Length: 260
Image (cartoon, rainbow, N blue to C red; front, top):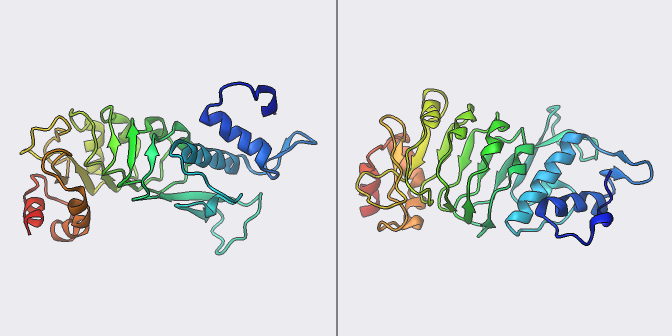
């Protein structure tokens, strides 16, 4: 395995910093005497993915057990309850939830190395850039993707349509520069996707408004900059779900709730 010290003088990418962490800061990943791997490759890659993520959002973590890092929930793949931690255990990351943590940065493609993840909630932060579309091909078990109230841009990719297990997708109050919800995403509504909340209010003329085909989005919000208060809309989200069963395509009930 490549010794990071051989390239210590080079400009370090976040990927290289993550590799350096695995090589230099961990004694349980690579046995330097025998130059062999000391834990399952799946575990190594999920540690690498999480460390890349935390570097990108400038939120360093402490401790060697990734399942105890902020926002992370793990499950034993062998269905053992209260399974003890060890370098050889099959503990997979199933949830990454850090809403309202004032995170800044972009989501790295390395999140694709979390194939067992079921829930991602990074809402109400200051994350920007494109969505990690490459990861969409690997998140076969993802049920919840909550990315609302951020600064994501670059449009919406049809690759989201690969999330065939998705049940809830909230992407409102971002900066997707208009466009239309891709047909691949709308197609998920024929399966398990019961909640699709986006900036698709028909009363808005904002550049951030997205067009949503009929029977696709379940709740339409007013985009940022159109008299919107993200704090109010976030607080009433649970009431919207209760009162509308997640369906308010024209934003009528949303407007009434905001006026209360």
